[in-house]
Length: 489
Ligand SMILES: Cc1cc2nc3c(=O)[nH]c(=O)nc-3n(C[C@H](O)[C@H](O)[C@H](O)COP(=O)(O)OP(=O)(O)OC[C@H]3O[C@@H](n4cnc5c(N)ncnc54)[C@H](O)[C@@H]3O)c2cc1C
Image 1 (tube, rainbow, N blue to C red):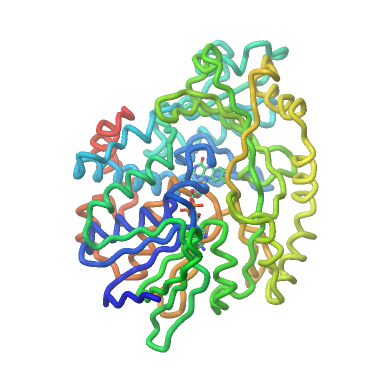
Image 2: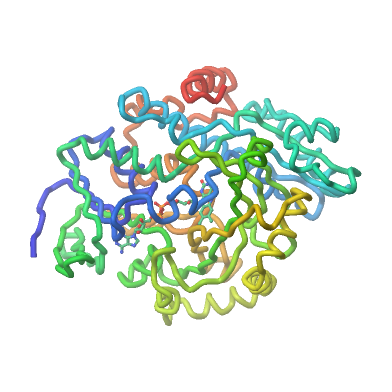
């Protein structure tokens, strides 16, 4: 058994994009803090953060119609799209800061300009898209958005959508040219590259955190097992961050953290159809999102995307959902059953009854075969040929189940950070909008741990605490600089 006893240290459990983002933020602001990352896999960024385990969309609210929900009185709420866009700008600003500071950090290697398009058909959906456009176009953050109902223009924006289509009635699309495709696995590894050059940083791979226990002095004992040698070591942490992806909820339960009582996780697996036929890939230079299918959870909105991974282009369509009892893609089928405890079995059962249509949807999706998946794709790209596409397993998303004061037990599709009472431990749970807003989420964790270092944070992220949408001249200046730097304008 070895113990570290550094006064000011943080242990981050999991080496995904969230932990690495938090670690780099801490190192930029407080370079003297010792940072230790523990990762159960052979290297960082191999779970949800890996390039093809997620869709690589730089979520900015441009094309995702679920971020602008419509209520029963036919009113569209654009607040979520605005919030996500502001948060995504924070990510872009941070990445361009790192690019300028470190010669070996190359943002253009993981971020590619890819237009974001929303495409709908049918009178009701076209009317929704036009109303959404009218509201967003007025917002400085969205002022470059274009709308068209012109079939020739849609064919120019995304030719595959119209090839072989039988009816051209009631189609519409919006487009933002400076949308992005992001390789979050590459980003994770470039963040690691920064930390590896620092003295007070260590990474333990093939090492699984088994237990975390609070000590009398409020610090935490962290027991780690080396999965190759089976040996254990113990670390003592002043601050602890659980960035263990889908496993975080069950780790909180094992700790019996009061603040996490009643929480549970519900895993939803994902699959993509992938195509790398050069002539097809050449014809699709966009991420095209449409409306969600009936009964489907919001994160299952189908989309047809150009992806650029290690300079290779491919097309991705999905996600197809399913139920799978693992909490991590590289986890165990016993993970989910083991996470069912006395204090969460009631909310879990209530949520399953309340979300019966989701359950049916998951069963239907799990039973789909290649031909039926291609049929879904053909709603987008009518000439899609079964032989050009193969199936790939994506990462696991673990949705949050929790007790809410007014609504009772509820299934949530966002992310949430749970803090211990003394704010020395933070845990990120949930799945969406995910990696795109990692910087804003981790800045929040930073401030909760160490207090608001406004001046230092502003040196890194000049827009910190500013609403860019309410400050068009600042937005213009910051975007002008950042986007030019990242090759987005
Ligand atoms: C199908 C799908 C599509 C998505 N699409 C998008 C998208 O288009 N855009 C977007 O922004 N986001 C997207 N996301 C979300 C995004 O991928 C995640 O939000 C992000 O990768 C989460 O990063 P993380 O660091 O929290 O988790 P992860 O990347 O999962 O990392 C967690 C790490 O913790 C390790 N770990 C777990 N338990 C332990 C333990 N006990 N000890 C040590 N290590 C442990 C794991 O091995 C893993 O490496 C998508 C996710 C999925 C699944």
